[in-house]
Amino acid sequence: MKGKKETQDASPLGDAEVVEKALLDYGPNRRWPDLKETLRGIRVVYTDLDGTMMGPGGCFFRNVAGEYTLRPARALLGALRRGVDVVMVSGRSGRQLREDARLLGLSNYIAELGAELVYDLGETVIVNAGGFGEECPDLYRAIMESGAVDFLLAAYRERLEFHTPWSEWRDCTPIFRGLVDLEEVNSALRDRFPGLVLVDNGVIPRTSPTLKVPQVRAYHLMPLGVSKEKAAAEDMRRRGFLRSETMAVGDSEADLAFCEVVGVFFLVRNGLLANPQMIPRIADLPNVVVTEGFLNEGWAEAVELAVLRDELPALG
Image (cartoon, rainbow, N blue to C red):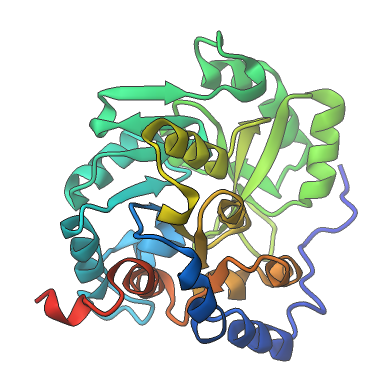
């Protein structure tokens, strides 16, 4: 199947001057002073992992330059010492996130872009099957048996493939890598497989010899009605968090929607550089702040601003 466009054309939004202006206009120096006055003490941080909380290669202790840094660890410890719950919200499966959470001293997380809400390292797991209904016993199997996966792999051959080996560890939603026109793909899904949507989870630093695309992004095949921000909103409802007590940090379009439910959303700098098409949307979203730092140092900057304020030097 031929698409209307083979790549995601960022022009003219990808123009360097436009991006640099956006980094200034939506950065902490411009937006944070007024925004912080609308917040109470932050009680929960919803955070993406890859490209956000983690540095290159998924390492918590390396920055964008590959240098070792303790800044993210200090920020995390500072938040935990204050009793702030740091909740990982990721496209990774719950099985993957359990080990990440255990190593970082965390307990609660949201897996597979919102399909799983997990408490106490898996003691309680709530699955949101979206349009497949509350009675769906096995969401992953239901999606695979719908025929949508076979359709996508056949229709977008050499542009879309399973994101191996991670695609083998899924509990709820299939995951792919490649580059496609989302508008075209989701139009086809609406016609053939209503109830399903392909979601872009951002650029990934991975190549594949079987893909013929200029850039590689991660995609999830999701039930309608399931998303990161909806899962966060459900968690807020269950635990009684006010919007003014919540923040989120991310790097992709899938993360940007957090701003609809939390008090402040921090987009790490690399997220804007990789997704300049978001600039017009951010202009109309006053509770979005673009960090000066990249990756995990941008994440640490967000926690320092919203949670620790001026206390970081005293943490030791």
